[in-house]
Image (cartoon, rainbow, N blue to C red; front, side, top):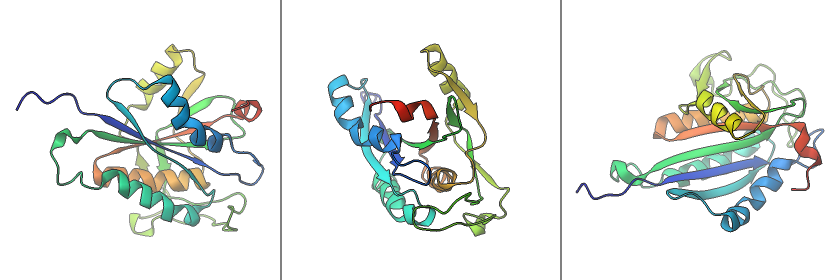
Amino acid sequence: MGSEGPSVITIHVTGFKKFHGVSENPTEKIVRNLKEFMEKKGLPKGLVLGNCKVLETAGQGALGPLYKLLESSVTGRDNESSNVGQVIWIHFGVNSGATKFAVENRAFNEATFRCPDELGWKPQRLPIVPSDGGISRMCETSLPVNEIVHGLAKLGYDVIPSDDAGRFVCNYVYYHSLRFAEQHRIKSLFVPLHKCLFHLDL
């Protein structure tokens, strides 16, 4: 009583495999190497790196593995005390047309794929979750995007806040993740990486 230490924050991370026009997805390399990198570098006290998973770049094809991961991060939380710690999901994606990193504030309930995903699906103006209503509905992260961007900028990163995650697979996955986060009192964030990373030896 009263002697409990600060709760732990567990970060789970996803990236994507290759997709149309991006034969080597830098988020796949980042996510595959993140655990080893953080073991060498060390994590701040109170921070734990949980799952690091690379998803298929497919709307419906990514949902099974995504929900399995999301569920595994909250198993047992509802029956425990409020001091079990926070869970934060960070989803990395690629915006090949961007020149800066972005931190996405929201996702739209719309799947409009400019090209087929890796399993051949190409929805147009389709609600991601029909029971949520029309394609104009949005889910927003509960994380303070502007504060995160400001903090990263102070560290020297070229980063901006964004209110538009597109309508491709990244938005599709982020929308599902934000809905899940809201229902289970956890947090979710999407960070699309810019084209400069395509030339890095990650």
